[in-house]
Picture 1 (spheres, rainbow, N blue to C red):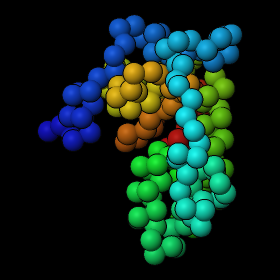
Picture 2 (picture 1 turned 135 degrees about the horizontal axis):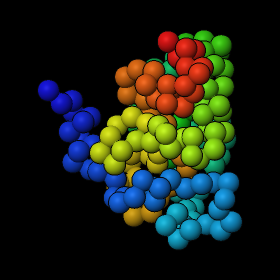
Picture 3 (picture 1 turned 60 degrees about the vertical axis):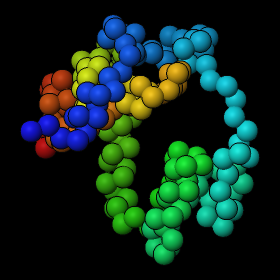
Length: 166
């Protein structure tokens, strides 16, 4: 039985024909392509209460010990689309390991990253953000979505050294 995520992805596939069309090689781009050029936004239109952010015009910071954390997350999502979390209880060593794995992944050459590319109707893998299907322009970013175990993707990317992901 398909999950709600699978149903949602199937209902909103990414609008790309060619596998390489959806992946921008950031190292080779000399000029911002029109496909990625967004209109400028006024940062002041996206600020939230200074009491709950790291400063005016900064990404909102949500302290999970704050009794209003749920409301603050909702406001940050509506006004910024992103937020930083403090007091989440995740060990610093685990965060460092995740950051190290991310740096290792995103520093690979494009040909290597494409070995774990997400299909247009897929959930997991390397590629543009799944929310790209809902916007007229592409985002100047790359991502790697993990849904379930990362082992198969790790085998594709690091065939001789994927055991660290067990």
